[in-house]
Image (cartoon, rainbow over all chains, first blue to last red; front, side, top):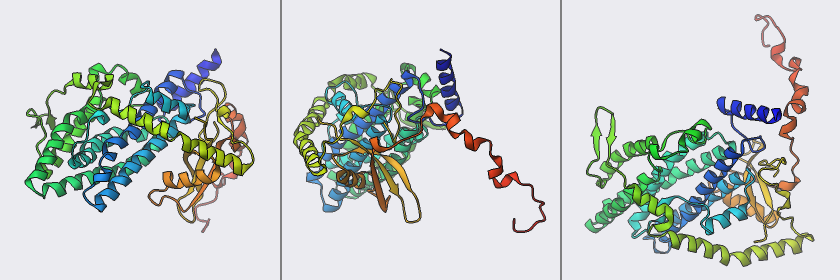
Length: 332
Length: 93
């Protein structure tokens, strides 16, 4: 009993001193489970996030745009991999995480359940969706969990390319024909509110925020980050020449920030529940891709076995998350 | 799905630097791990050399013995240059 108290105290001190929790440290089960859930949900978002834009790769308007879009979608896959790798340092099992995604037991960001209807959506996703993601993710580079924080540093470096290519694409379209400008405005209209929803429910409806802040899992509240995003984005919209679809959006000189209208939280609830425009399609696609890749995984295993002369070791080296055995970034 | 084993990835960022651990990935064999590591961890020239090591082949110190294990270095302050008092007017020291 005293041993547990000592461990808890050591953990609390690590957090209090802004030191990082590392994979093999003792940590409360609730911290481990919250962390795994957050990282897994983030990883799933990156993987599912390949679909809306991947939809346009074959129809990119030029070779330049196509190369950029392929690189971007490849980055999303890479981000998913960094994050799955971080989740595994906590004892999560990769196959199990994939299974939880395709059976709907773990969520991904609601934004990816909206369709991409024109090439302007590619630009708006880079500008608004990746812009919102950057707002959310930059503070996570200081997450109390070391492996997650390090993954976030890599990801944030790459996200900057994502946002800039999107904005540049939109600037190009805004210099084009009237029809192209209308496409940009239409995409902005569709993605503005869902982008604001990416920060999660308002603070008074976010019950876990307090504990997550205390644990250094979360660094700012949902509403703080949402406000920061609005303040950053309004001047970008002006420069671009599009109108953000919110009649209540205006500068508040007293607050020194922009006021904005009420978000439709019922819509977010519906999308999270699975009733968004593309939920079923996204999960079905991921499931099919996984199933259709089975033969490749099996063939590679067979090849490895044949050429090494012994069966590749499989999973038994990975201990249960809660067991006294340790996990680490270098030995699980 | 048959699980591919886990490999840890180490990168040399540029000539003159040590390899540094950057993360892990799953692969069927070491050669595939190397190719995946290139695609995953060096998309923007982050490395000039990669090591991949099967995670099971790594032996690590245990956090349970963190204090005693590193204790031998703890009480040997005389290994540090600041342990020695040298007058300020001694040049080049």
